[in-house]
Length: 81
Image (cartoon, rainbow, N blue to C red):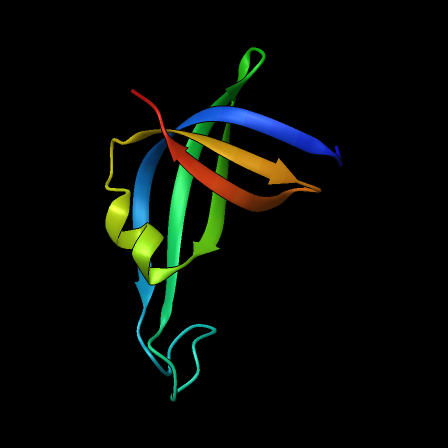
């Protein structure tokens, strides 16, 4: 489903690929990923997105967030109260 979606989600996992592993180059600082679980109707969906180092550090496991998706790409993460 393409288009704009805002989903309430929980950060369930954080992953880091050091330089030279996974898809990370040897020159960079590595790749950072957040894994989210969100309810969509009666189902629970799991999303994994590459994020910035700042986002990786800001959102810990268990954080309740709103993720904004545009054409199935992560556009923004907002902390929920």
